[in-house]
Image 1: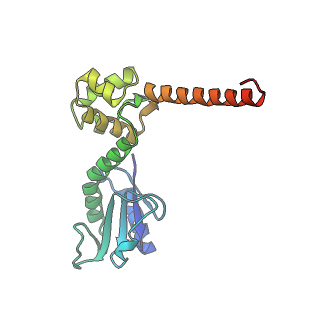
Image 2: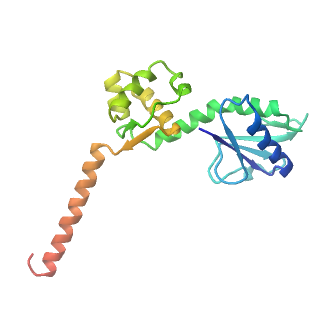
Image 3: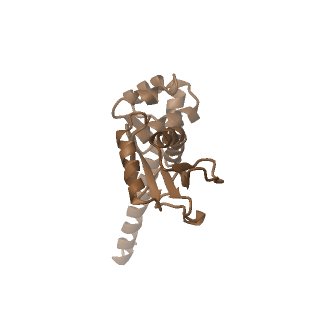
Length: 209
């Protein structure tokens, strides 16, 4: 999955340089695109931009100031200008694992441990290599829809690890989700109550109640 490098207060000529580097580099471990607007995963900001203006439409996972070469900066990470391709690539490769983990955690928050999903295609090799148990979990998900809880019970793998794995698959876009039985029952009960209420109102209006 491609990650997005956002820019704020960066001159156009440097933005174009960034685009050329991420498009042509063969050393990036994850595909990146450069965006001047919209959501981003990593935001490059000119060091002269006030800190309270470091924002994007959706909060980036990492903010990196762009500073003059040799200039000291309080931030732990910074990108020096003139921008060198190898330094940009090293920076993006360094932050990629943390960004992926943060996106996975954010995706997991949006899903209940009881929500069920099944595989629509086999996960990427880079995902499967992260943990030896992922092969067993993927095989189970390829056979039937499972929640993190049911997958944990089926595979005897910790539920948090199952949630992490399903978050990675969600991020990769290889899962098809379906509401859990509890949610379906709740929706059905709510619909029944609404229908009963409507019928009661009709009866009262007709004098039949």
